[in-house]
Length: 187
Image 1: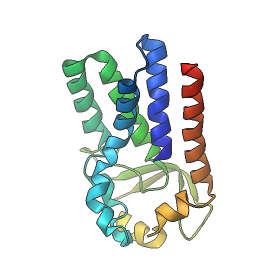
Image 2: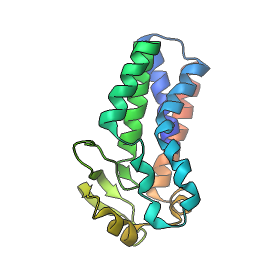
Image 3: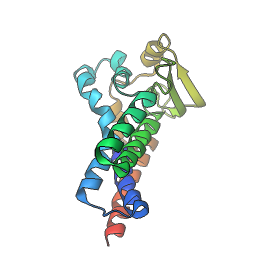
């Protein structure tokens, strides 16, 4: 999540610089908002957070890039213009990419053509603290619940974000970097 916030700030800065638009609070706010909005479905599953069988479910509502990205981008293009469409697409794409590496169970990159979840490079596991490493993980609907039972962590928020862990360091580092970059850009 902290990396998403940082990415939103960086996307606002890059948009301001390359599209020659003012770096406003509105641009920063919506860039950040677009990087976290796909996780709003998390609120539905948060009350069930102590049951690992729901860990992968939060990404079953709106984490469908082949549908979400084109529909949202076209809507923003026609409603607010190409700059906002670009910000929406870039921020949302980053969120989906970020959700496909590290923690979580990937996303359905190819939905509606495939119901498989895809995750890349690294998968956090409570059993193997260093994580599972592989170029690509493919989880079928049938296989995913078994993987969640085997490797799921009911306290993943605490174990990832409240402890010194490579993912936490990377997440917080990216966020701090974005704040430093914002300060330097505004200076």
